Amino acid sequence: MPSVVKFMGQDYFVEHFLSPLLLLLKDGVDEVREACAASIANIASTGSVPLSWVFDKLFPSVKAMATSDYLVRLSLITSLKGFLTVETLPEKYIQEVVALLVTCTKDKVPNIRMRAAQALSLAGSLTHLDCCKGAISSALVDLQNDKDKDVKYFASQNNGKL
Image (cartoon, rainbow, N blue to C red; front, side, top):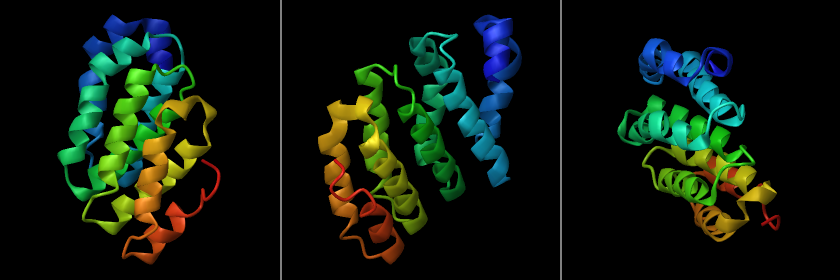
């Protein structure tokens, strides 16, 4: 998808690929959802389209995944993690992505909290996310007191690195 956007243009992508891509975010097969979520993050990181376009056209669908079923919420976290690796992401978008991840730490499903802890641990090690280190650190500390041992484990993986 990043190549389509880069070489065919944003308008072509929107007209021919956007709707099918967004439908794939809710596919019944985890690998399809994960690949789609990663693709969206890759589109953001190519630099061939303005990040404002990505957040206007793609991010609303990613945000809507937060209210979907468990498997779709797992893919949401993959998308968010991908967005956080984009070093040129403006602070207003970083804050929105981190806020969604922090919301995922309160999910009733332990696997969602665990994957959110993994994503936040990664985020804590990224230097371009300094604006949100406090929120990231606070969420990880909260997760270290989780009732699930795996969530606790992944929340403690970034101990002292924030």
